[in-house]
Image: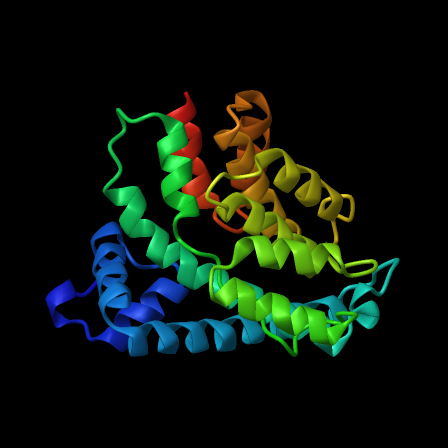
Length: 248
């Protein structure tokens, strides 16, 4: 592998997306993303293309294998776009999270680590993404979330009839971001999403559910969810591993 001093930003991003960047490289990339908004935006775009290509390859492989259910035929193009955006956002958040994890004092209580991870604000939803009912209220909720007006986000989404999994997810996250977090309310919302394990938002719901249980000192529940995230190597599995270690 090349010396980090010889690598430009593009090489760093490519190695990261391919899972070949070592700890020193991840730390360098995290610093660059924090200080360079253009680079952060570029990484998000690169991640979206990478995710799209991976999704395309997976679909091609499915066509070559006989299956009892043709799951791909039931997924709309909107769901695919949603999945790609979620993966892109997740990759960017993982890079930003690395700085927090690498500077964490293991002597601190695990709840402080969970709080640090929550301090990295989850990316705002995209207005045109998803089959959301009551578009006007959803747009208002998105604007409120971007402005960190979390009580307003919760109130708006609570007023929507039959909210989507995406809307429930952001209501739950907003409850965790309140000045006085409503951890139990967030837990209830996130568990609703996880009643459908095939949901595009299941991985995100699991991660925030683990954080909510951690903040509530529900150690056994948090550990179980973290182990599931780690075993399946799903979204935030590296941070999940660090949080689980802090709980031991």
